[in-house]
Length: 77
Image (cartoon, rainbow, N blue to C red; front, side, top):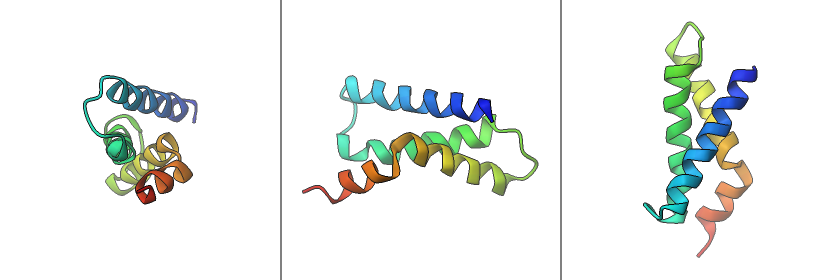
């Protein structure tokens, strides 16, 4: 479980790097975080099935983005 916390921290760091470099609009950063989480779950989490890897990736991405922050950014006009 400790490795998942490290993966979440890496996803947060990568998302913040993209934000600081101004490579994409801020409103798409939660989607980027979710995509990075799914990729990290697929490649770095050691579980037997692909469905479990994707589920862990979703949890990593949503944890990194912050579920409440994601809903605020998307609904913000």
